[in-house]
Image (cartoon, rainbow, N blue to C red; front, side, top):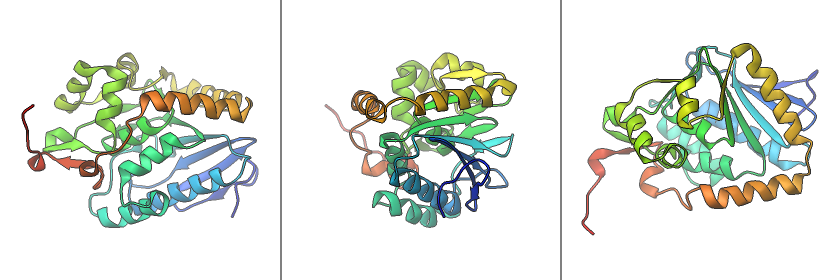
Length: 253
C-alpha cells in the first residue's frame, strides 16, 4: 500500500489519506469522538513512516471527518495498547515521544482544526508545525489539572512558549474551553478562519510550502526546532500523556 494521487486514495482504519503532488491530506475517522486510541496511534505511525520513507511527500495535513471533534483525548481504557503502538515509531512506549517525533520530522505538518481538541488532542496539534482553526466550531482545552494531573505530552512546554507564563497558567489552571478567536489571540493557533475558507487556505499554503526547495525547508525547521523544542521529554511525563500530581515531590533550591 503506497501513497497515491487524489483520484486513487487509500484508507487506513482510522485515516482517509489522499495525496496531491507533495501534499498528503490525512482525515481522522475514529468514532465516536476521535479518541487517540491504539488504532489511531497505529495508523499515525504507519502514515508517518510511509510519508518519510520517500522524497515525494513534503507536507502532511491533518483534519477530521467529524465536524464536532478533531481529537478529543486519549482512550484511557487502552493505555498499554496505544503506548505499544507508539513504541513502534519511537522505540519507547510514550505518546509524548511520538508527538516530539512528529515535531522533529522532516515533514512539515499542519493541523486543520474543526470541532473540539482537548488534552492529548491539544498536545497533538501543538506538536504540529502549524495550526489553523474554524472560527465557528473549533474549541480548545488543556483540562488535565482539573483531574489532578499535569499535561504530559508536551502541552505545558508548548503552551508556555507560545502564550507566555501567565496565559499558560490560566489555560491549564482554569481547565476552561477556549474558542478559536481567543486561541488565536493567545497564540495557541496560527489563525482562526471562517469554516468555509479554512480548507482552501490550508490547501493553498500546504502546496506553496511543498513547492519550495526541500533542503531549505529542512534547514528552517531544524533551526526553529533548535530554539523552540525542549531537548528532552521528562521520563515522568512519558507514561501516557499525563503526570499524576500525587507523584510530584517538591524540593528547595
